[in-house]
Image 1 (cartoon, rainbow, N blue to C red):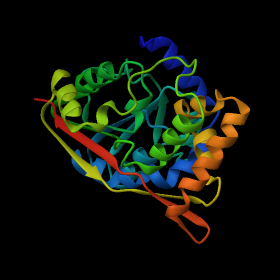
Image 2: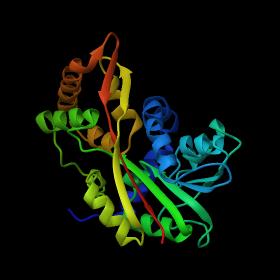
Image 3: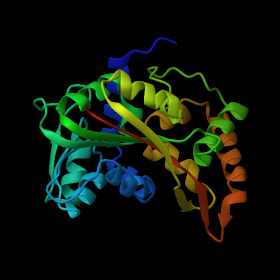
Image 4: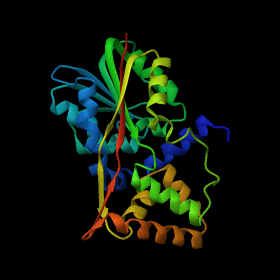
Length: 272
């Protein structure tokens, strides 16, 4: 299916406008687990000028500021920028597009993107832009989810849709969601954008949610692309998908909580 970057971008941006609070509740405790490794990869310390691209609720920017970095966070969703400012008023958060960053060349020592590249219509443009705004010798790092067989939450949901619903639904087609889960592809894309010495490693993470419908509700209410897939299902199919997800999460349930392995892939490189 032909990717339509502008339509996909509009779809993603509109989706994020509606769910800052829900995302914070469902994914906040998960996506912060990769932040330490992400900041270490670009050697964030006191005095480093850092750009947090697709900053969302601002978790990475806030953590970097606590290390003493001089931080700017940028996101294309005004609602997410507002959420970030509310959570940490002391950090400079601005509206801006990862594919056309509103900054001059060579201004930053480091740049990061925590799961943001998954929500872009032209991810390769974003890599080139990150390269452009870095000084020579600057470092860039990004995270994505590991493959669905490893990120159990996604694997369970996608399997339930395949078994009980329709995987091909009328949503704006975007880039493959798990493209950068492949270390070889991440390294190739970084080199193509002008970086050198790319490296990739896995960061283990665990997603803790309420048992029962916690996973289904998090995916339905706190994501954009996966939520669109679920909401496009017929009601009877959606009920079966919900039941399938509930059943498949039983193996990961302890007391009243589900604990799902959700590893991230961390890729980083240097601007020559």
